[in-house]
Image 1 (spheres, helix red, strand yellow):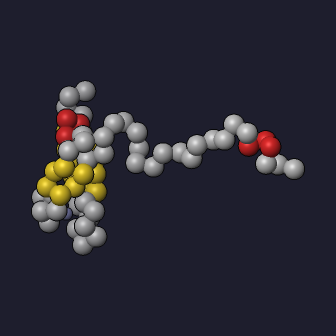
Image 2 (cartoon, rainbow, N blue to C red; image 1 turned 60 degrees about the vertical axis):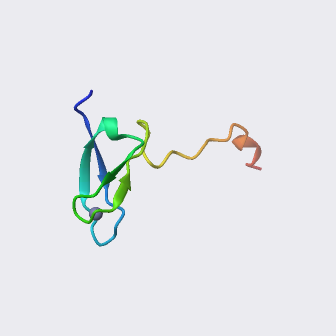
Length: 63
Ligand SMILES: [Zn+2]
């Protein structure tokens, strides 16, 4: 999917512009067109927030 876009929000709280950049920009930084701040494009397909790791021994915690 070379023409797929990644949407990222500008970290500048006064801007918060949604930037649509090509996936090829992943792992790089792009300049916000709204405020000029550098916006880091997350690398990979994973969402920014990864689920908490499940502990295999969780059953031991329960009394
Ligand atoms: Zn901005």
